[in-house]
Amino acid sequence: MKRNLKLFLIIPALLFAMGSCIENEPIIFTESVAEFDATVWNAPAVGTNYPILTRVAGYGRALSTTLDPLITRTSGVINFRLNLVSAQFSSDQTVSISVVTDKTTAIAGTHYTVPTTVVIPANSSFAEIPVTVLNPGPTSGSVDLVLQIDGNETVKPSENFKRLGIRIPQN
Figure 1: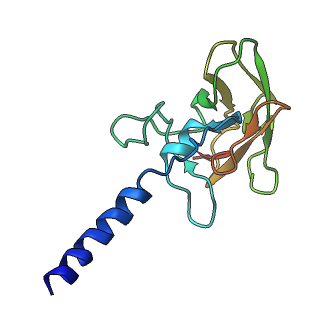
Figure 2: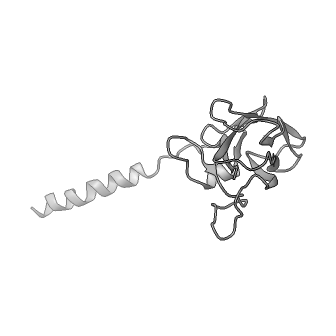
Figure 3: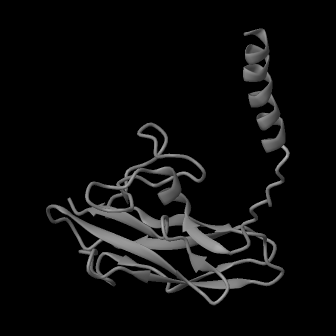
């Protein structure tokens, strides 16, 4: 009986010791992707896979009702940060940005202007995307602007964090 008990205790210990010596190859992320900082930190809106912001997002944190000002039709230029998730490049990277037209109710040139490219400077992990909110005069309701990172040959959009929605009240 004692012999069986010893075997019962020794065999699992030996199996554990043999199994713990297996060397695993390290997993190294080698791709380069771009993401919206505000999308990483804020929850998606209902029915979407991206947030729709009603406040100007601070960098590197979730929205705060006490720290972040509301977005209004008189907000002017609002900068949103684009993060590079990879090693930094020794040369500038020009990344394409587009408006998701089937999700956007705002009108270009009436409610907003936005660039079609943004430059991530050499030896940097960030770029700023300036969105100019235009004031067409008071009306009712709000309009939405949805931006998308399209990337370039080297920097691809992050599938989970490539879109950002901005809600612009018109009253």
